[in-house]
Structures are given as structure tokens and as C-alpha cells.
Amino acid sequence: KMTSCCYRSVASSLLRRNGRAFTTARVCCGDKAVDVGGVSFASDDVTNATPSILDKTNRNLLHIPHHPLKIIKDKIESHLNANLGFDDPKFSLHDSLHPAVSLKQNFDSLLIPDDHPSRSPSDNYFINASTMLRAHTSAHQCDLVKSGERSFLVAGDVYRRDEIDRSHYPVFHQMEGVRLFSLNEVNKATNASVFFNNDVRNELQQETHSLETSQFIGTHLKDTLEGLVDHLFGPVEKRWVECYFPFTHPSWELEIFFDNEWLEVLGCGVMEQELLDNSGADSSVGWAFGLGLERLAMVLFDIPDIRLFWSEDERFLSQFHESKSIEEMKFKPFSKYPPCSKDISFFHPPSFAENELMDVVRTVAGDLVENVECIDTFTHPKTKKSSRTYRIVYRSMERTVTNDEINELQNKIRQDAEHTLGVELR
Image 1 (cartoon, helix red, strand yellow):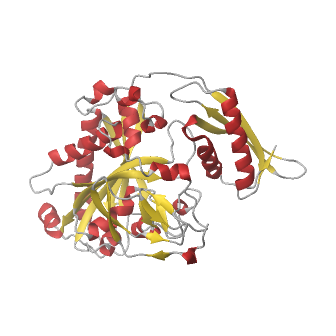
Image 2 (cartoon, rainbow, N blue to C red):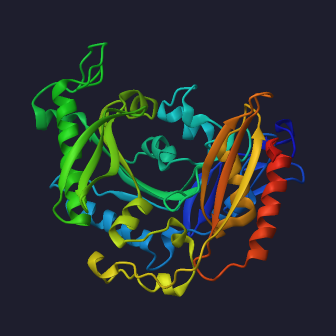
Image 3 (cartoon, one colour):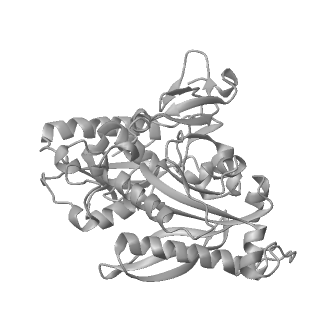
């Protein structure tokens, strides 16, 4: 790896992904580079994006015809634009923005505090000290507002280091929406002042928003999203739960009662006025929402394993088509191959982070791993060393794996864990 002093930033250049234009800061460095979605970036001592993760930046699942994630994305976009009010602007769609963003875009522009746990290297994939794979589509929000967008949707692949099981994957897809309102729109709807210098926020409003403004934006947001949920799930019981996001206030999560349980489907809120002010939209107010496309698709299509979204097996892909209704696209399992389980035990240093182990496992075994679970922890009574045992469940979705094959992978995982994580194997 090269140190950060070896690279230089080149002026923001116009690039294309799937034929659509986007801008990003290209970084070059000597003869060492990292390829991210066809663009070269310098690596340095901070780089932790693994080859298996970087390979995913070229897959572009949201542009594959008949893919279940594309189907959900298209249904959301078409519904929102088909149900606009008389004076509502159309939502523009941005689904080809490059996944490499600056730390400022991913964190600072969204008012995420310096000490917020979401900034941790154990949770994110860094390309170098100044660039990372976006952890959420909101990383593009301020840039789009600065460009003059007032009503838009963003969809794309996002990257987070995470546990390994059937519902978690280090790459998934988000979709978010933003709707800004002019002062005239709010005045007309509320017949009241938009801004209010209160200097103290409460649970109902920001310090600069009048109560009428906050209530108008919140009602418009909730009505929009309840209509969207009914479009996807049919009429369902709903409830709004107050929550916290650094970039909205008030903030809510929308839950629905589906298949006899409450299910969280999205997060949203009134956009922080400071964020809008910083983006050149100080004479506007607005709302934003975000949701996970895999989460919705798994529920709507009865898809049991998140790894299936990356499958190129026609037995999976052929079950979905834009011309079908959601009810006609319930996933039918085409095989169930037997699992193979192996354990790994080790003493670990105090700095051990579980997501680091998950990355080692993913890098070695890829999508052959179905689940990784910590099944035992203990502290040695004499040495006071801490130990953990993890059970790794291997299962291919397309074939039967052999014990010899899995033993080879398990031995490689043990070697890499010892070498890269500083653990002492037991």
C-alpha cells in the first residue's frame, strides 16, 4: 500500500456508468491503484475495501432487466410520479451515480457528528483516506440540492461491513426521496410564517421552523409514504414510530403489520434546515425518506436468502418480470443443498472487531458462506485472555459442496485470521 502523501486529486471529471453521466473526484497515485466501478483510485494505509467487495461495484443490479430489485425500484418511481398533486414537481431519478464518494459527502454534508459510531472503519469500506464506498445513498443528497434539484429519487448500491447471515450482506441497495418546498408553497398551504427564530428545538419542530411548517411537511411526507406502502403491500395497518437521524428532525420510522408481525419498512423526516442552508437552498424546506430495496423485495417476493439477489442462475431470475403483479412473483425454491458447518476458535486482542472476521470469511469463501455466528465466549482464568468460537455454515445455492472443498476454505480462513487479525488460534 502507498501512503496518502503519494496521491494527488485531479479535477472533478465527467464519467459515465450505464450511459448516465455523473461527477466524482478521480484520484491517481503512482503505479498502485484500486478499481472502483471502472474508475482508478489511489490506495493508502487506510484502504480496507477488499477485492471481493470491489468486484461488486461493476454488477449494477438495478439496471438488469427483470431483476427483482429493479422491479421494486421502478414500482416506487412510477407510483410516486403517477400520484403527484396538481402543483407537485416530478421526481427525477438518479440511479447511476458512482459509489465512490468523499468522507465529506458521506458524513459531514449530512451533519453526522465526528464521534458518531457510523464513521467507524469497522463499519465502512474505505478506498483511501479521503474516499470511501458510500454507506448510504444520502451521500448524494446535498450535491443534488446544490445542482438545483428540488424533487428527486436516488437509488444505488451501498456498502457496509456487516455480519453474515441470510438477511445481511456487505453490499445492498437503497432508494431515497427528497421533496423541497418553496416559501410560497408553505405560506399558501399554512397561511403562516415558514421560519421561526425559537433557538430551542422540541420534539415537534426545529428551532428555525414554525410549528405550522413542521406539521405541513410532516403531513405531506406521511401521506406520500402511506400511499406508497399501500401500493406495494396493499392496504395494511401502519404505525409511525419517532426516531433519531442526524439529518432530519422530527424523524420517524414507518412500520406495517404484515404476515402477523410489525415490520419496519423505511425511515424519514423533516430535513435539517442547516443541511439545506449549506446546500444553497436556504429559502426552501423539505422532507426526505430512505428505504432498503432488498428488505422490501425479500418480504414482497418471499426471497429467503439475500445472496440470491447476486445469483446469475436463470432458475432465480426467470421467476421475475415487470409485466407480472407482485402476487404472481412469489419466489419458488429451485433447490436446497445440504449445509456444511465448521468452527474456528481463537484468543483475540482487545481491539478485535467482529466485522473484521466477517471480511476475512467473505474474502476467502464468498457467497458459499450462509451464516457466521459466535457460539461461545470465555476468559481464561489464569491468563485473562479472551476467546471466541464462531460457527461458519457453508451452503451453495447452486450445488452440493464437498467436505474437502470446505476444509480447504476453512484452513485458508484460519490462516488469514491469524495473519491479519492478530488472533491466536486454538
